[in-house]
Amino acid sequence: MKKIKYLVMAFAAVCLTAGLTSCEKEKEVEKIVEVPVEVPVEVPVPQDNNWSKYQKIVTDDVISKKKHDKVILLVAFGSTWQQAFDAFDTTIDAYKKAFSGYDVFLSYSSAICINRAAAGENAADGAEIRNYYAPPFWLNAFAAEGVKYDEIVVQSLQVIPGEEYTRVINYIKDFANNANGDLDDDYLAGVTLKLGVPLLQDAESDVMLVAKELNALYSTYAGQGVVAFMGHGNPDSYDTYKANIRYSELEAALQTFSPNYFVGTVDMMGNFKTQVYERMQNAGIKSGKVFLHPLMSINGDHGHNDMGGDDDDNWEEGVGFTPNEEGEVEDTSWKKYFEHLGYECNDNTVLPYGLLELPTVRQVWINHTQNAIDGEPLDYYHSKNPE
Image (cartoon, rainbow, N blue to C red; front, top):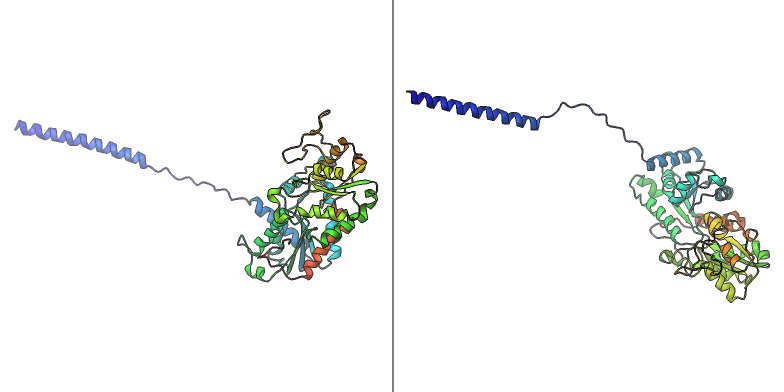
């Protein structure tokens, strides 16, 4: 009996121990899976991103200024100088006068210029703070509810049909093809799109016409010395459509009026200021005055600094200049370069005018716009490239 009693007590003890262990494990499990009481969390309402903010600004501007059913969008690379702002304002006024049945707006294609103009990069020199926006914002605004222009004309303010002009074409293609899928496809199917080409689009008619107008303005200077025009140019790897040849063609056209005209660039390999100097030497022009003139739509950073500035870091007395591997003398302006080489080149020989500031040259762009309006609607599946 005692034996059985002890066995029962032992069994009970084992069960009790096992039960306690099991409870402890359950408590541990409860601790692991325990879910705290939920506390309501306030989720912040997403703020508009910059894209939607800018789009609203542009769309509201277009809605407030819309007077006609047709619109012209001028597309410039951009600048941060007050002289450039004034040139753009004058150009807009000239377009409104020439195309009285159209609303006219202007955009920048350069994000750097857009941001720096908005930040007042040259405010210390008297430049205003200006807000220019990229072409997609304007094109989308033209298609917005309450706007929906019947005809949209995009006019490139580029000088040559190169890299920047390609961007203008692509803006139109993306718009026409509703690249973001947020526009009215029925509207896009019916709107008329047209494209005005750059200043020197055509190798024959445009180049010779611009040469004629420049000579009419500067023949007196060419009679006193060299008139050297400084264009921008595309680097060799970005020489879209081989458009750099327009500079050489323009120099040849100008030299039919006077051998004292030369055309160089900031970025075209083989046509830097060093090569302009070589051509001047080969032509026997080894001294005298050198007048400098921007061959760009506006007189902006390149005109103020690269051409007519006082940057002179490359020059070393007794040594001269040290060209880079492409033959260009960097960190020295055209003005200082020709001055060091013995020419009379100084602030008095700088002609600080962008091409849009020259009414007769600006008229060539206006002619291109009129030709676009008079021509067939743009086949945006194919671009208007030079031959």
